[in-house]
Image (cartoon, rainbow, N blue to C red):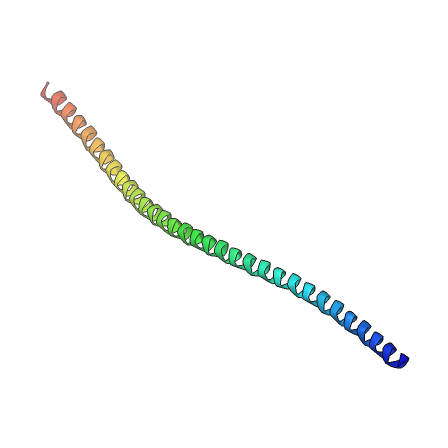
Length: 114
């Protein structure tokens, strides 16, 4: 009978140890579950931020392309204007030279009439 009681007591201790182990494992599992939920939540937030940043980058790239087009157009207009200025400046110099020659001819004609 003592052997049975000792065996029963031993089984009771083993049962109590198993319960404690199970409780510890359940607590650890709950902790890991909370950690998993927190990590999943953080991953979702990171994805939202990533999408937001990607949209921002796309918008900035579109703006940059627009600015680049404006720059190229302005550069083209500036080149045309510079070429036109040079042409007009050359025409002006030619006209000034013709006017000077005409004035000289006129002065010679007036001098020869006297």
